[in-house]
Length: 434
Figure 1 (spheres, helix red, strand yellow):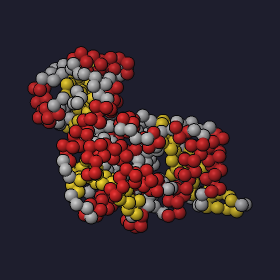
Figure 2 (cartoon, rainbow, N blue to C red; figure 1 turned 135 degrees about the horizontal axis):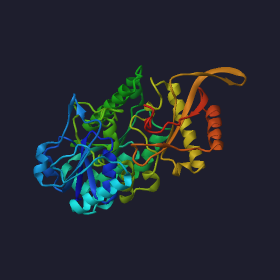
Figure 3 (tube, rainbow, N blue to C red; figure 1 turned 180 degrees about the vertical axis):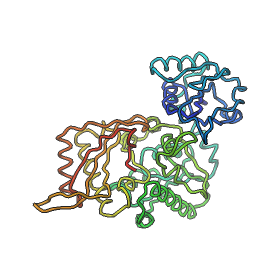
Figure 4 (cartoon, rainbow, N blue to C red; figure 1 turned 120 degrees about the vertical axis):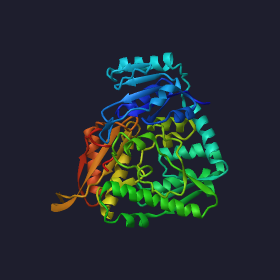
């Protein structure tokens, strides 16, 4: 079943994702597209019921103000213009000011003006994606980069539903996984995928490529490129692999840069892809936010502990071992993260906090152990709550819990003599440190 669609055209606003989410909260599907989308491209989407032209402070590119193409007004679709008022628009709004009032205007536009039907839900989304995947893939085979995280797991479930045995999953251990992570992924999926689950231990290969590299963007791109090379090598061992599936979601795309938004950080599955990619991409979740991905997983019948497990970035601990990746600090990140997860689970915080992890920076400080001077690394704890990963708040952890975690890390993790707690929300900081 095709859902009605309200397009949000990006004219440099920082509120695009907010507006799209408000529309989806009304039960109507909404997509964000660039300002220069053509009338034909909108026609090709087939189910568009209205357009929101959303202006903002980033509407200047190369010194010139940007605008939508004049031809979109010839489509006969209702248009709501925000901040760049147009005489051709059906309605205009000075700005997204008061949230309650803005939502009233939006609701009237969506239902009264656009006559959209509230048929956006995960059941319909899954049905649509299954149909689209079958149409895109045909009788070919798909290679899925299966990290074991929520996003790739949901993609795997969608693909199994759509194409079954045409799916081959490859799990690559790049040496930057959490403690016992790869073992858990294999145990979780080998029963369902059997011979279609390939495990590749490429730890030495990745760590060798990253030796001497300290700049975060360069690290991400090296990891992204090497992932693709490993997948290409595995694909050559198989017959008929034409597609590469990824768990790309909308926040990945936004943070990796758009026409009106500068790069925050390149995600290995977006900004880190090589120009000579040999596959056609399959990315069924690219318009979903993280909470919607979880809802999709529930709809697909995935286990609760899989759907609500900790998010884990594609570059893994490589972006939590800051600067050049060194073995002693990498192990300190891995061991301290395991302690944090154990203690959060014991305190019931694993069901309350959206994401929590440790970071080990590339500098040392003076400390004392057994009445002797030490010169070792600090461990930084980060625990955040968010709905869609676009903004995040800090979880206030009770002191006794923090003190217990601190005591365990200092006494059980090698090369560490301090523990700190990161109080920075997003924005100012991003969720990850790199």
